[in-house]
Image 1 (cartoon, rainbow, N blue to C red):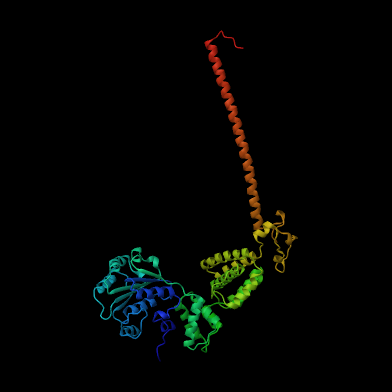
Image 2: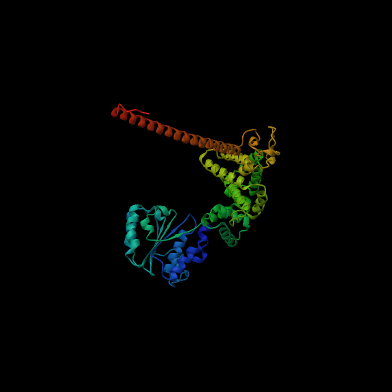
Length: 474
């Protein structure tokens, strides 16, 4: 029985043309090689599975290729030694297990000797951020003034842990996550080579679950192929592996939320959970749909691969009967609810309470409609709850006394308006009191001035009488 090679290893790119989703990085490297303008040290950063170590290996292969071309030929002795793993002048180091200064000293010592074959001796340091501060300091001088025959290629997922003194001495490449549609196309190519049948929606779901990681997407594809009885994978197989619900069930749940049917929404959510679906994934899927509804309502084009095309058409119909303020409220409440899910041991209860809140809030009138008196919330009570207050719901918001909800309580919007009016009244009273106080102060100052003048006159008169006692005052 032959040893099985996982898809992520079997289809690892061996040349720049095979790299997907990193076109800018590849172009810079290939042009730099043609112009001989690449430095002695390069750093590749990015999240897991985007091609950091893979690109570093291809760069090493290109540096040592006997034909001196940006793209490795794959036929020369050096390229062949890469293929069979016998390349002695390319040294790969795992910094996670070689973190100390002594390990770096061995690298520095090895730099003194020229390569056995070829022009360059190349060190590939993976997870370089794991090196200790002393190890980084020991590497500084060699990175700044390396021997002509030495190249350093480093990879990391956490650039912020690398000292600035190191970052200033290397050529940095930030690798981005692979876009969903690009990743789905790559999976389609691999399925064709593996004689596996899969439709576009299945591959899009896998690519979306991989969150931009090529390695993760191929690992998921491996599992889905193994769970299927034939060489054909279905959406049910993907849901079973990923623990995600049927898209139509989530769409139905969103419909019930938008029409403020609390009881039916909760029952639908509980039915979804019976399929052993993650609460966080349900919340994130609803969040995706709220985002899509907001884009549709705002006439903004959705990014490719975000949501399946048939789902988008259903969302377009829903968008006709929902307002942007309502979507904004739901978005904020969902974000807060997702944070609460992570903190609680009973995520299903947290999510259920969150759904109750957003379902109720989706039917509330918008603040602008209440202020202008243009809201028509008759649908809020239609088929959902009995209006026991005797209030005409069509006239809610027409004046200050009617700004109350279906339970006879003052609405939040009305409270805001009343508070503003109250604040305005306080300001007017304060202004009046301020004017009166200033006027009173002026009067007191005038009175004090008159009294001071009178006292001064009397004092002068007394002095005159003392000097001229016989004087007659008329």
